[in-house]
Length: 251
Image (cartoon, rainbow, N blue to C red):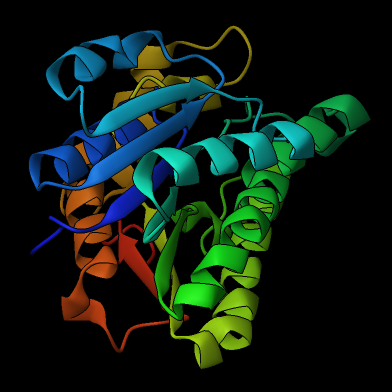
């Protein structure tokens, strides 16, 4: 896969999945702008890739901050070839009557609205260049829900619907839009799905790992492989698709 002339924006890049994806693009020769509210884990990459990488601290549910960040990314990289939205928050399992409107709004805004804001910001330049790739990280939970993750499942279902809507809207401009549904993933986020006060390790092993037919948790590297494929010219006829990288969890 040749990313030597590609320019990439990764959101949620400070997280386990986002950081690995960022590292893969840099290793393949792309220029990368990484966006996240916290960027402390990205400092080492800035030291290693001084000419091809910048991390920016951005509130990804604030439209003005997103627009400014995309403008800065465009100035730094000279355009944007690829947008990868990995930003997301978990929901501690809870019955619907115990979920506050504030929590619901936060999950929907981070997991769904942020995709709208970043996509809206990059599409104008992608249309002008008549090319581009947007990949949104959703969740297999949107297709095979778990009890108690009502807001999370709704937010990821919205992310998938938005992905398909954008794919058909932007096809005439040769902009491809796809989604990835990770299964239970071996990141720090997984433990946050446990009920408040629950045993994180027990939930991780007994609830999540046992639900995967292939018997293993998905790794950030697994998701990065899928992102690299969808972002490459090898997937030039793939748009509006959702790739399940879930070890069979959705079956």
